[in-house]
Structures are given as C-alpha cells and as structure tokens.
Amino acid sequence: MFAIIQAAGWPIYLLLIASVIALTLIIERSFSLRRNKILPATLLDEVIRVYQSGKVKPEVIDQLAGNSPLGQVLAAGLRNAAAPREVMKESIEEAGAAVAHELERFLTTLGTIASLAPLMGLFGTVVGMIEIFGSQTASGANPAQLAHGISVALYNTGFGLLIAMPTLVAYRHFRALVDSLVVDMEQKAVKFVDVVHGARK
Image (cartoon, rainbow, N blue to C red; front, side, top):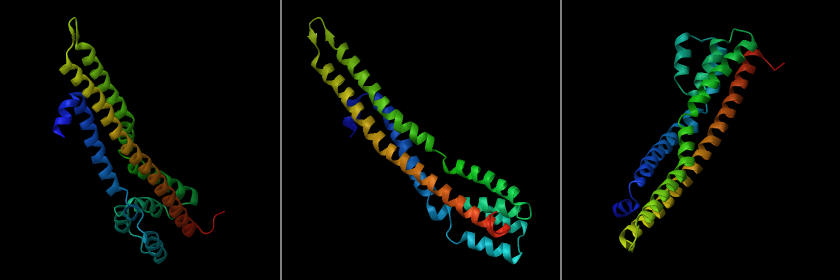
C-alpha cells in the first residue's frame, strides 16, 4: 500500500485526507441517525399520558427536551399546550426546523467530498501528465520519469473515483434517511397537537 502511495506522488495525500474525513463522517452519522435514537418508539404515548394526567412540570419538560430530537419537538409543544392551536403548531415547527438542521449536520461536507474527490483525482492526473511532458528531453524520454508520471496520473484518477463512489452512496442514503425521520417527526407532532386541541378543524 505504501508503495502505491509513493508511486501516486504528492497529490494522493489530498485524497487520503479526504478519505479519512469521509470515513469519519460516515461512521459518526451512522451512529447519530439511528431511528430509535431520533424517534423513540414509546415517547409520544408517554408524553400524551403525562399531559392527560396533568403532571406537566418544568423539570419534566426539560427532561423531555433532553431525551431525543423528537423529545425537543414535543417539549416545545408541551410548553405551549395552553396556547391556541396556531401558537402551539408554530412553536413545534420552529423546534422542528432546528432539529432538522441538526440532523443534516455534516451532510454538506459529505456531499462536497463526493463531488470533489474525482476533481482531486483529475488534478493528480494533470500533475502526472505534466511530469510525463517534463520527462521529454532533446535526447528522448527518460523512462523512469515517464513511468512515474503515468503512475501519478492513473493512481490519482482511480483513487479519486474510489473515494467518490461510496461517499456519494452514503450521502444519498443519509439525505433520504433524514427526510424520512423529519416526516415521521412531523406526523407524531401533528398527532400530539390533535390530542391537545381535539380533532383537526
């Protein structure tokens, strides 16, 4: 592996840094975007039960807000349960927007790496081509320099694509997952509003 890195020349180090960042973000998002962590299965029923029992205290709301992203949204609604329906919905929407922004954290970076990696590989290819042309002398080409230039060109192109493909798949997966989580969260929040204010008008 080290021999390949040496043969690929200095542009490969940019791609190595990008690959480490991408792998770190993929692992982090895999743990952070687990559905049972974002949307605990029984949380809505527990919140409805607490609301109907009349035991809504500030410490209970604070504990709910720290429970999960869904908890933050429901806590915003619970704080405004006595307000008109429109005010309660507005507070839930504001909390939901903040939660959605948090769920999308690092996805832009992941998408940027997926788009940038092939370009970085192309940059390495250009560097390799420059070395190939630089090996041309009046007496002919230097075989060692020619071979090194070809290695730089091909390894960087291949490694750029190797990084871009799985990173793009991960980015699209996480983007779809976040969209799905946000829709589920909205549905649970609407159900809570309906419980507090009766049937939808």
